[in-house]
Amino acid sequence: MTNPAPGFVKHPNYLVAIEPLESPLQVTVGTTVIATSHRAVCVTETKHRPVWYMPLDDIQANSITPTDTQTYCPFKGKASYWSVVLPETMIEDAIWAYLEPYDECVALTGYASFYTNKVDLLINGQVMNKDGPGFV
Picture 1 (tube, rainbow, N blue to C red):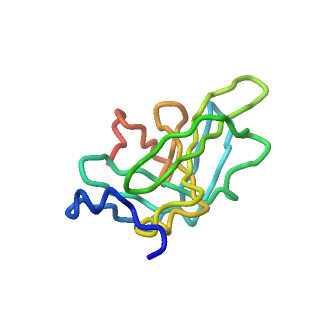
Picture 2: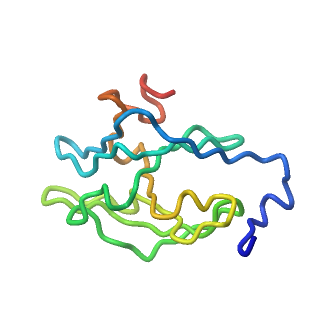
């Protein structure tokens, strides 16, 4: 490995599982669809709820703009952020991606996720917001 995650050294039993999502994933803001993917993945991580990621190129580029925000995960790496920008609204830092993830999570390269408390994320048409009835 050339870029191993330091988090796994300290916590060798920690799990980050990245699996294909068999169903279509769609993201909306109000009635506006900003992303649709048939290539999404579900990330299951120790002590976290599932998180869904889709290829960045499945997100409408004219609906997002990069921000200066960055965060860090010792298992996945440095995250970069984007805001959703639509004529009627702007949602700051609604999207994040690990552009150069650690080796153990290299499958997330080119994938991004959405904060489900900021947008509606639908799997097979069912809203999967964190606190909503569709959360699995």
